[in-house]
Length: 141
Image (cartoon, rainbow, N blue to C red; front, top):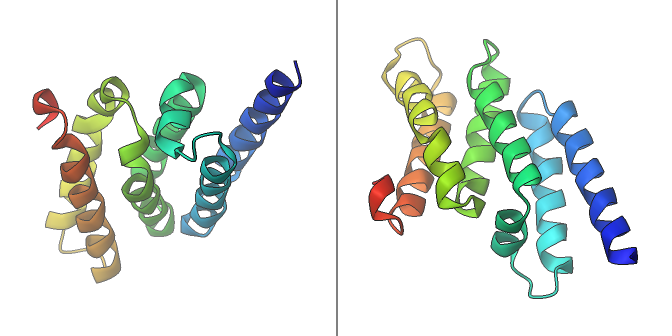
C-alpha cells in the first residue's frame, strides 16, 4: 500500500515539474528528478522505471513535443536537452509515435540560418541521441 502511495506521489511531483517546465532552465530540475528516481529504484534502472509507467512516459513525450514547437528559443533548447537526456528511456512504441515530429523539428532547427549556434548544437545532440536509441529497434531506424 505504501509503495502505491509513494508511486502516486512521485507521479504527481513529475507532472508538476513538467507543467512548470517552460524553458531550458527547468530541464535540470526534471533531469534531477529522473536521476533520483533511478537511484531510488530497486534495480537502479531509470529505463525500466520509465518504461513501466506509461503516464510518466507520455507526460515527458508531450512536454518534449510542446517545447520543441515553442516560438521561444530557450524553450526549444530546453526541449532538445530534455529529449537528448531522456530519449533512451522511452519504450519503442512511444519513441516511434513521436519520432517523426521530433525529427522534423530538430532538422528544421539545424537547417535554419536564423537559429543560434547553441540551438543547432542542441538539435545535433538530440538527433544523435535519437539515432543511438533507435539503433536497438530496427523498425525505428
